Image 1: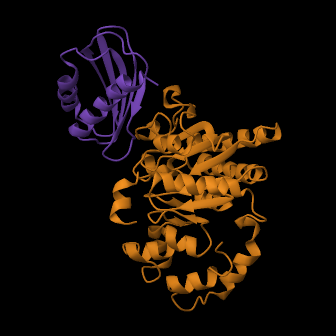
Image 2 (image 1 turned 180 degrees about the vertical axis):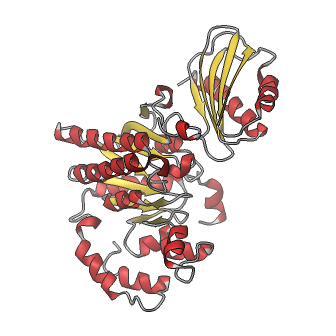
Image 3 (image 1 turned 120 degrees about the vertical axis):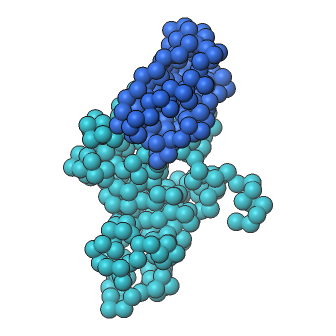
Length: 102
Length: 283
């Protein structure tokens, strides 16, 4: 088990909160909560060791342009592939826009 | 299920526990208690190097079913095989106890449990076992007032101490995908030998412990296809039926009598088992 914390630029604070996924084999859980403006913090707990650079690269592709709302993300990962990570992160932000948060 | 039905149905098995609970409750009534953002997760798994899930794999959803107060307790089979740890099992036991308390105070809260579980979480050992015993006691308490309905849809099925919980429910609903048994196939093979039970032989496993066979043998009350609408309809039908004259666990003598008819010297076939157990059980 490894813990990784990453920070990215962001827009205005996210309104509300959302959750996607399950900590099942090859899957992950993403919890999204609002954060102070212009800053997104991602706190990852993963069952797979030594993949810090991959996490950084995958999440940088999603967040580095700073276009998404500012959020605190908690990721609990059970060996998800980069594709699944992108899908789940996309899903929480989508839920936010659809429902206006939970 | 023909092709058209297959295309039109909404799979229940493919939904996670939270979505299942939402679909079973009347539209717009879903409200989660101890939701994942409260972060009441397992205090034991991280110490053993295992990633936790924020809700410990169990969803407590309050709302209404058929216009009556209800609580749906959904176990997510994906997280640690739906195993019952200290927190997840306590969420279920506590909710059932509160539902019984509601009934004593004149609020007719009823409960649905979504069994997708291998039983106790081995990493939490006695704490999980103790809480499962509390779940058993709480089901028996609550079912005096309202039907307690268990649903096992698959793909995990329902095993171990939680199979006892399922058996204590007033009614049990299963799909073809589900399995129900005290011990899982690998455990039976390990203890009794491969000649007795080959855990790699999936058709054989389902022929004895699958939802369809469990329905034929009276251990399951309603057999539904993997369709959210069909499962919800079966659940409402059973709630409307109310409490039967005797719950399954109050009919021990009948089951023991059937067990005595099984010839233990020869390997039974699923058909023989069904022939012995089906007598007068099917409603």
